Length: 383
Image (tube, rainbow, N blue to C red; front, side, top):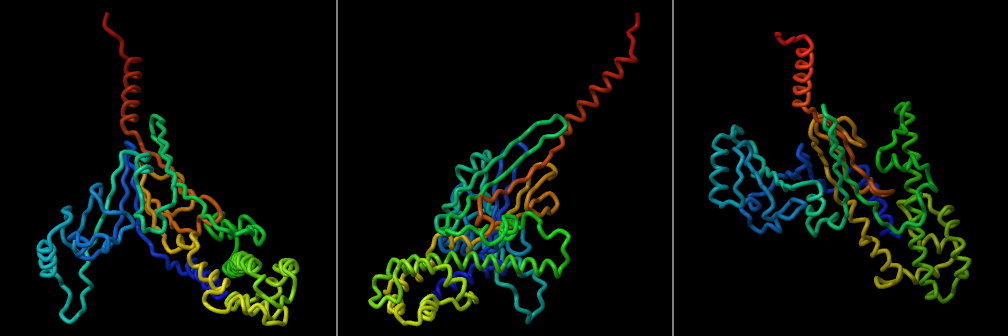
């Protein structure tokens, strides 16, 4: 079960080290309901010249005629031409380098261009229909729901925006609620609700450590159960069976609970041989084409695992002032979320925010009406 452990460790490392490949994504909603989505990155000169876009495209979307691209080299002016000739790139680099104040002998950073890629949409509905990640992106098949609700309230216009990312589809049979409370599970994967309120550092460390331990048990038991199912389906290949298939199936959970203590050392073959004091199970793992070896190799290809290799630093800018948000961090008027697959592990994950834009004209018009009303009260026509 070495592959199983490799995946388990991969699962945990991604969670704590945040080593997934991360893209910056900004969505801007304008007062009239139109919107655009931007991506930013440092790219090589090959991308700017349009040379082998498929190989040099660092962005999670395809480059096509709908894209607006701005770029600059270090502190140069912004350029909107794309693609450009190599001669132009060389000219910009040469001009910028001539102003470079880096001391002789000090190694300069690689010559990369900063690029802003924008896709414009007539509405949020238009974005929902037409925005797509490129086909080779791990999230390309994810069906995201978008919603914008605009409400006029005379002095203010309110904007309610949301994006809903679907729950990951796994073949786990045991619900996580068998190992921890629903709130603990939600906190572990999404950060909400805030179940740590009132705790000090020592208490938080102990409490979160227990949640982590229960998470490992939940994930490990599910992986064990999946491999055990494969084992049972191939149990007939063992000639001298140490126990009947019915008895073996009934012992699945008992063997896991009594023999799996250290997730770094799970090896189903050795555990079963030790438990039944035999070496009969070895045959199912013997050779690269053995059924259990094939199963363990296939674990790397499970669909849901690919989602964990990508994440987004997601930013949202709404008209006016942000007045209500969920699971986010506000940086001025920009709302920021960490968007990764963990937040979709237990259910649909929704990013939602509300903003309020002041209708200045409504205040001016109201003042004029009030002044006219007061004036009409005191003004008396001449007879």
